[in-house]
Length: 533
Ligand code: DQQ
Image 1 (cartoon, rainbow, N blue to C red):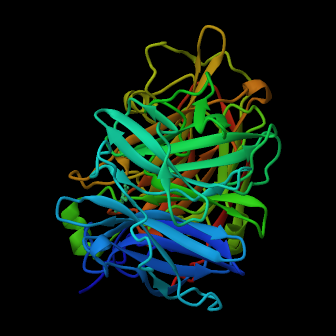
Image 2 (cartoon, helix red, strand yellow):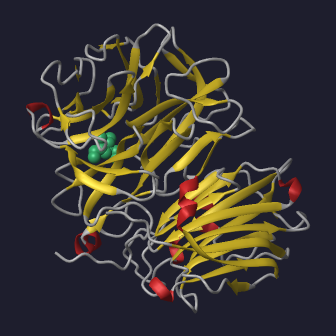
Image 3 (cartoon, rainbow, N blue to C red):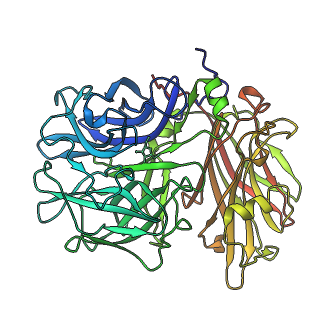
């Protein structure tokens, strides 16, 4: 089988071939980061799911090990689906995952432990017979919508708790299970939370500090923290999170009034980013978030190229000082791949200008840019019916002239702009405030017409008093992973240009609004390949 290299990533995680999806059981243990992920050993479409396993010292360079968990027992004969790791004090890690027991995709919760806790790589995992599976669906639970156990947390009552994603009719819900000994698990009567969103896949539940960037162990509670509940919605293939209060005694999670608890809520990423999972990294006191970025070309393309799916760059996650949302930002270790640097300073962009950033490998780069403007007056009027950012971006793309914006980057662009993925801001004037839209518009990314080319977008909750807006884009052949305003609004796009590949790819800054824009500073680095074996 040949593997097509053209759109393979240089520094985003992907195995040499075949299909991958959700990140599973991420953890830091005894000096190594572990990443497990859903993997099809037999091809580049979803199926035959096992847990592939890689280890790393720095979250960027990875060494592949043998599959950690694969069908071997009656309780996971038809697949080993997503799950999480919990590190038990004095005992080491336990993985809890969803086993598929029949052809109807009936789901049970199972566990595995390292065969040899002294093996630094934790290469081999065993599934003890005692109490495995540890949970089967009660009669009132939908057994084919019952999966993806979270990392456990330990309460002040010395009891461990986990969540399992589920659905009852149209309601998404997370069931709570508790255990004193991590063996026998009992379901709490009511789910910890539910909402009218359809199935909740891959729930993630953790505390964040109200003040500061440090991450917290999943078991931390108290008045200095707020909780995050994230769910992945299989209906939309988007995920959203709320901020809220966890009542450990009532075993309830209540989102804040200001948190929108539906598909229209806050997202880590407004693009192609799904089934994410976070873990606490005690070695650097941070919480790290992994997310899967699916392909957006066709199934036939995936079969032809011999691979499908990547993991987004791991991100540090913390609460914004506004306390209204989370911020996510690429882990600092990514900077070790930065190679040759080019800069552009005080570059003025009049309406219609686009200026090339020369001297870098534009197909594999890290770009940081700050734009300034002297005036907000020309911002276009905002129509309050524009509530859906993605619809707005498809209506007002990078070529649609505006007042303040559109301005930003043209990434993965062919020389004559037959192809380009614009990443840009557009500022609107609403009755009392300004509305800032960030777009990553794949509609012009490829001459190929049969692929999914969404106009991904999100609004940016930013105070424009400083008259500045910033972007960071991680460009990697078929990925443009963008962080707006220091990680407030982020968008990962998967794109498959035909012309703008390898050394034929270019990078430009542009402005298509009447208000002149200045590139205050732009730094761009060639990115080295990560060592992903
Ligand atoms: N993928 C897994 C499930 C999960 C879904 C199966 C989310 O456990 O719900 O590969 O992408």
